[in-house]
Amino acid sequence: MNVTVRVSALVHPTEIEEKVRTAITNIFPVELNHQDFGIPGLFGEGNLDDLRNFHLLLREYRILDTARHVLLTGIEDNSIHFNLNKQVAFVGKVNFPAGEESLGSIYIEIYAENKEDLLRIIDWLAPGTVEGKPVEEIEL
Image (cartoon, rainbow, N blue to C red):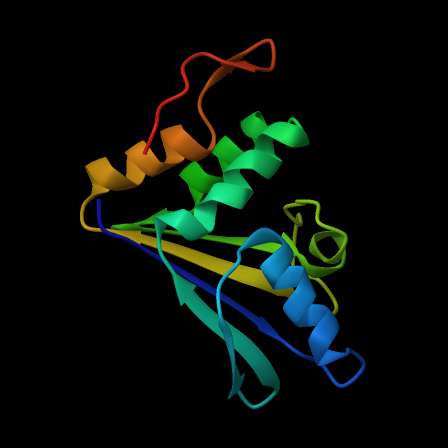
């Protein structure tokens, strides 16, 4: 399965770039490059293997239902778009912000070759649950 994961975050003047870098790599272990989007930022690209830690954290913090909802509502064509809270990611946890954050979020895009593969990725990352327990765990 051909999967591309893109992560990015702006580094605002009140933030320390290394802390933003740590926040991103705590969740997605990708190599990050410095880019200037008008405001300096960090950008990285990876593959399915770079989603494995995120997969584990969703189970550790028991947020599969929330994650599934966020991922399903973030589908656009053959991609998923969603945000994570930078401050929470800095301490190695996952939180999906309800809206725009004052210092911005970590932006994640997951691309697959087709919608079927994309839905399979969602089923792997955040399967449906009954009473908080996954109905079926699949391997990718």
